[in-house]
Length: 197
Image 1 (cartoon, one colour):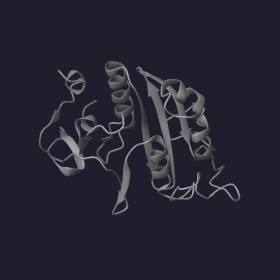
Image 2 (cartoon, helix red, strand yellow):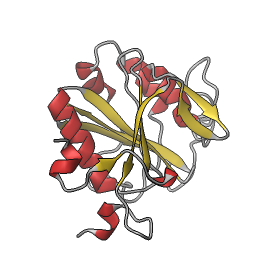
Image 3 (tube, rainbow, N blue to C red):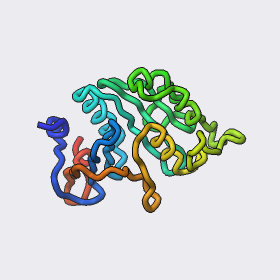
């Protein structure tokens, strides 16, 4: 029985494209899971922790908020260790009360193939939507985007070693889809988590 079935939210083999979850083939020790277009933050965070605990592995929940900024939550072995959100002022989207400045030294403890100094150039925050002067440049030589451009997260993912490309303005894994699944929906197209208490 899958994690979602135990929680009463099984996945199905067919469904609406907006409820599709793609699981990509492993590449360089990364497996990308492209979630549907929903914003069920609590559900996504619970799922990542559950999978991390079951597989005893590290991972990232990476998001882009309306193209305005990006962030991540880093977890390993079923526990959350780090957060980063580009906007420093106000409550952090999804991580209220957490320090969201990013702590690369915690990440490299769990992924020794990465170096803390590789993270530092990406962990620059804006304050009250004001980008620090001179900061909207590529974080590292060879990066494609400025730190605060809509697609800056692409450079961050590439630094991690995740094979990523842009396709029609969307961030897409370069590896083939291994398997797809769809969230169970009601007759109005809402996912079970939206209509079940």
